[in-house]
Length: 392
Image 1 (cartoon, rainbow, N blue to C red):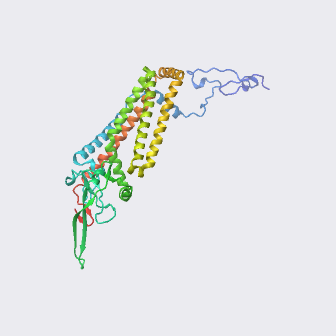
Image 2: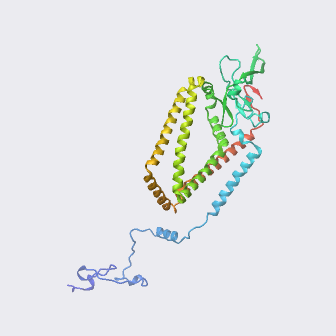
Image 3: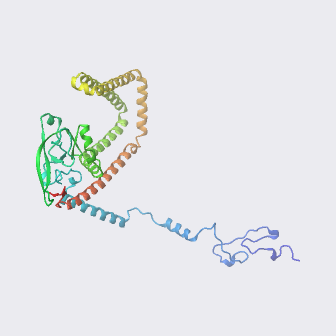
């Protein structure tokens, strides 16, 4: 029988066990070797299943210094790519013409306003068939013109020389002769679209052009031509919006009362001016013998909108006179708001800056793509064009 507290009752675990299985405190220092553990037993422990490799990776990530500059390799890669694109852009402008992307092509395969034969005729016009008694547009016989005909030109009897081709084949079918001659076709009023095409104002004539214009290539030409024709307005209005936002943020801080007064007076004055103008034009149109018969509903609608704008202007003027105390309170609220927004200029500027950056980036991408396409189009210049079995 062993005595209580004999060495055989102690466990060999790192924690010494007191008699009757109670744990007792045990001390261990890092400088001590494995043989110094209580019980002199070596054991391998792992905390919560942690992976030693992940522990080393976390340690290296924490000790890695923070990068304060762009990766030089990627910077060199993007710089080389930009130079590569710039080379093609310069080559496209020097060897080709981006106008080929959106300008129309006449019945001879010549690009209006680009090829030497039609350099002074930049717009494509689809003439009426002079052989028909009714208005029929010759979709496959477009001609380059200096300007689109207007209603005044139609009233003055303007005519467009239209090519007519007739092919005769002999009985033995061994030869064919194609004769081309010009007939004078009456002009129709048209409007310029995408800085390239003369589109008729008459809805019935316009519907005849739908098969020729409603395809992917024509729609792409319209998109490119519209952007080329309006890029100045796009960037101009963008800078105007930035200027107006800066002026608004400055005025709401410096003179909120003046801003409120100018806005109220401008709104009331604009309502009275626009309403009076619509009513005047509506009355004059309804009383006109010719215009009133065809556009009476439009003129009546214009008068209705004009009276509505006059009513809105009167309501705003009465509200300013009656609710003077509320206006003073509103001005005080504007002053408090301007003070609160004094240190928050990014509320007004950040969206505009991001919008400007995005617009410039998208425009840069579009211009590079357009120039690349112009280069490919320039390479094909000089190749013969097959048109209805004849080389032109």
